[in-house]
Image (cartoon, rainbow, N blue to C red; front, side, top):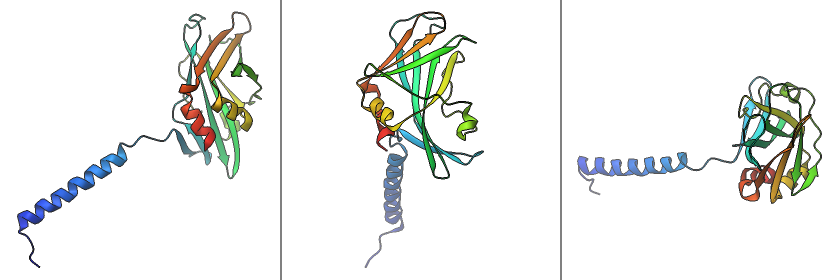
Length: 187
């Protein structure tokens, strides 16, 4: 068996290296998963979230903040095998104002028990999602499995915000923008 010259062997090695780099680059640039798990280092609670909260668009522009966006996102906590699912909702508000939130799944009101207390009560040291704006109010609700299923399969989700005084604002999202919610539900 005759071995090639040193330049031939180096060229072959470079060629193999180029294939390896191309393969690894393909792995690195592969699309990231829509559902992410991370460990809360302070509480040892595993948190499962979607990559990006679902964005709902205002049906009409107005309101005190003029912000046309509201957000919803499910998350799950796992504390030593005890799992619980929640829904995070964020809507534009004015400082100190009390807002009531009503979620509708295909036009039907959804009953969501509110979570009392803050995220520490859920076994988390930090909020599962960042506040989208300083004027956004955030609330947490328990998320029953059947409600998650309804939201994941919905043609349209609407979030109504009802200030104590003032006009009801409606934010909606269509089925085509619920991919991450469906991924969370199907895991």
